[in-house]
Every structure is written in structure tokens, then in C-alpha cells.
Length: 92
Image (spheres, rainbow, N blue to C red):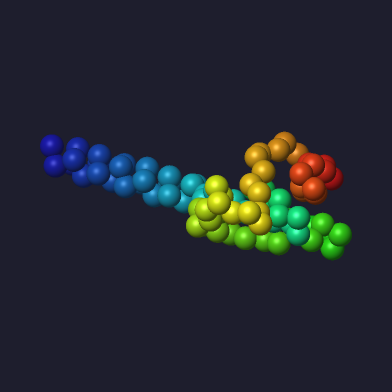
């Protein structure tokens, strides 16, 4: 019985260890342009100088009062890689 319990505990620990190693944290990034359009991306991009995109970590989004922010506008998710300009999504 003792061998069975030790074996089960070892298997459980190995399973947890493999899960911890193979699990990667979700990356999230926020960019805002000069017009006040802000959007979420899954990757950190290097936008050209003509885009004027300012990077913020994802935690920055949660510390904003979007309902009362008159300078910035949160834009919803958009498929494809690109950016917002004057309220219009521009795809690369």
C-alpha cells in the first residue's frame, strides 16, 4: 500500500511539474496613438514613426477609467495586424 501511495504522489508531482513548465503566460499589450485611439495586441510590435503608437503594459488598461476618459478611446478587438488612425482600423 505504501508503494502505491508513493507512486501516486510521484506521478502527481511529475504531472504538476510538466504542466508548470509547458504553461506560458498570456502576453497582452496596449498601444495608443496621438489621436487617443487605444487597442490591444497579442504581440509587441515596432510601429513606424508615422503611426506614433505609444506602448503600455496590459495592466495599464485595468487602471484607467475608460467611461470618463475624454482623451483616450478604447477600440475593440480587430482581426489582423495593424493600428487605429482617426477611428479607422488600418491593416499592414
